Image (cartoon, rainbow, N blue to C red; front, side, top):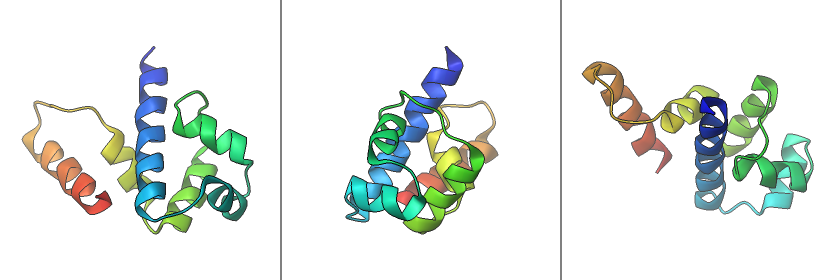
Length: 94
């Protein structure tokens, strides 16, 4: 169940970045080397993706894959320092 929740959050971050960067889904998919349908399922949290695909998506969107993963982490945490880093990452994405 946690894996599905994580996939949904990663997909939401990718979708948000794609929209902020004004990429149409087919254009991003073509640049990344995946189908538009697959990318749509990733954005909806219905499919997981490999780290290499995440790296390619991040590169096209102009961010690091680490930033996408950090922005997808659930809040709040007990570790304030880690929380601050993730909030900084989310601010950079927005």
